[in-house]
Amino acid sequence: MTPLLEVRNISKTYLRGGGVFADRAEGERFTALDGVSFEVAAGETFAIVGESGCGKTTLARILLRLIEPDSGNILFDGQDLLHLAGGPLRAQRRKMQMIFQDPFASLNPRMKVGEIVAEPLVIHEHGHSSAERLRRAAEILQHVGLDTSALKRYPHEFSGGQRQRIGIARALILRPKLIIADEPVSALDVSVGAQVLRLLQELQQEFGLTFVFISHSLPVVAQLANQIAVMRAGKIVEAGAAERILRQPAASYTKELLAAVPEIPRASQV
Amino acid sequence: MESLLEIRALTVELATAGGRVKPVNDVSLRLARGESLGLVGESGSGKTMLSLSLMGLLPPGARVGGAIDWRATQLETNLADLPDEEWRKVRGREIAMIFQEPMTSLNPVMRIGAQIAEAILAHEPQMGKDVLRQRLITAMRQAAMPEPETRKQQFPHQLSGGLRQRAMIAMALAPQPKLLIADEPTTALDVTVQKHILDLLDHLRRELVLAVLFVTHDLGVVGKVADRVAVMYAGRIVEEGPARNVLETPKHPYTQGLLAASPTLERRELTPIPGSVPQLTELPSGCSFAPRCRYRRDECDRAVPELRSAAKDHRARCVLVPEAKEGKETMDRQAES
Image 1: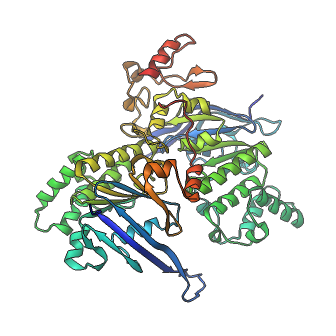
Image 2: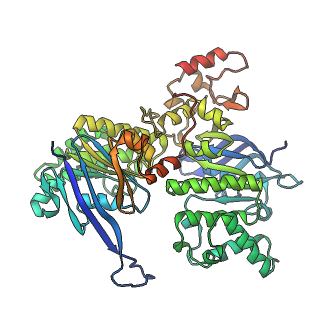
Image 3: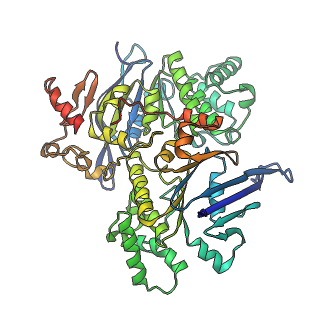
C-alpha cells in the first residue's frame, strides 16, 4: 500500500544569526534539517520526538508548506506537494490540518468560537450560507465534547483544555486526512492533557485520521504512537515501531532520552 | 528534631473581581533541615501563592492568617506577620527561590558574574573585592558551571537554558540560604538537561544541608527528588506523606486521578479526570474535588473533610479514609473498587 505521506530527503538551512547584534559572517548557514526521510501510512500515528532545536517544528512547517525546504520531496496523497501551486495546492492543503501547542495564542481573541471553527469553510468551501457554516461548526464542536452554546462565546471564556478542543474542531471541520499536531498537550495540566490525548485517539478512530504527532515528551508519545522517529540536530537518529524504540532502542541518543525521563514510582499498576 | 519551617493553618485571602478568594486555605506543613518536600498541584491549586508567601512576595492587599514559624537561627520568627523591613534579612538570604523561566529572571543587559555578585553584595555590602571574586567563583563552581572565569563575562543570551538555570542556582545559593524554593525549575528545559539540574539540586541539598521546597506539576520529578510530597487542590492540602507512599499507594481520589492521567513510558489506558480545576470563586461547600470524584457520596458535600491519617505520616483529606485507626477494611475496599 502506498503511504499517505512520504517525505524524501528534506533539507533546510537558515542564514545564521540575523539579529541586531549578530556578526554578519556572510554565507554561514545553520542546518535545521539534514536529509530527513520517512513514510506515514494511512490511519497510523507517526510521532516525531526530539529536544528543542532538533528541527521538529521546522519539519512541521515544511509539511504544511508554510516554509520551503532547500531540497527534497514530499508526496502527500499521491501528489508532489512541493510542486503544486494555486488551486491544486489549496486542494491538497485542505486535507492536512494543524493543531497547535498553545491554545491561548492560536485562537483569535476577537472572533467568536463559531466563527473560528467555521473559518476553514470560508476559505476552502465557498458558497455555504452563514447559517450552514454555523450548523457545521456546531456539529463538529459536539464531536470534540463542546455544546452549541460555545458558538456565540469568545475564546477567553474557555479553559485551556476547552480551547484546545476548539482548535481541534477547527482542524477537523474540513474532514482532513492528515492532522499535524505540534505539542498539543504540553501546555495543559496533567488531568486535562489526558482528556485531550484520549479525545485525539477517539477522533482518529471516528474519522479515520492519520496523525503526525510532534512532541518533546517520550511518555506522551508512548501513549499513542505506532511509529516513532527520534530527531537530533536536524537528523532522524532512529525510527521504527513505537514498541521497539521504547523497549529496545538502538541509538545511544534514544537511550539517553529514555534514561532521562523521571519515572513515577509505582507499587503495582493502579 | 525541630523543623526548620512550620506552616500552621496558613490562609491567604485575595480580593478579585469575582469576590474574595483563598488561594491558600488552611495549609499546615513542616520542613526539616536538609529535607526536600514536593509541592504538587495543577494550575490554580495555590502552590505558587503558597511559595510566594514564604518569600514575603504576596500581591498587595493579600490578607494572611495563621503562622509560618521560621527557625533558621536560634531566634524563631513568624513570617506570616513579618514587617517589610525585616523581610530583607530573610528573603534571598535565608530563603531563596528559583523560577521556571531563567531567561525572564535574569537581567539581559548585565553580565552573569555581575548578577551573581549583586546577589552576594545585597546581603553583605561590606565585602572586599577579592573576597567577592572568590565567593563568585565558588558559587558558580557549586552550581557546576563549567569555565566560571569565562562564563562570568557573558550575558544571559549567550548561555543555554540549562546554563541559565545553573546561573540562577548559583545566584540563589550564593548567600547560603537554609531553604530553597524551586518553582517548576525544569519545566522549560529539555529532558536531558532537566536530569542534570535535578541531580545537581539533589547533590547540593545533601552537601549544604539545604531544605528544598520543590513546586511542580510533574509527578515523575517529585518521585525523583522529594522525600515527602504534599498535593494541593483548590488551595488546600489534600494529601501529604512520604513520597514513595503517596505515589505508590495514593489515598486521595485526586492523587489517584493525577497518577492515572500521567503519561509514562509504559503504554497504558490513560484515565483523565473529568471536568476541570474549579474557579476559587465557585468552590463547593464540601470537598472541592467532589464534583470530579467518582467516589462522591452525600457526606462529601456536607463539609470540607479533615486531613485524616491513612498510614504512618501519611494523611489525606477524604471521607473514604477511615476516621480512627480502626477500619483498615474500608480502605482495602476503596483500593479494590
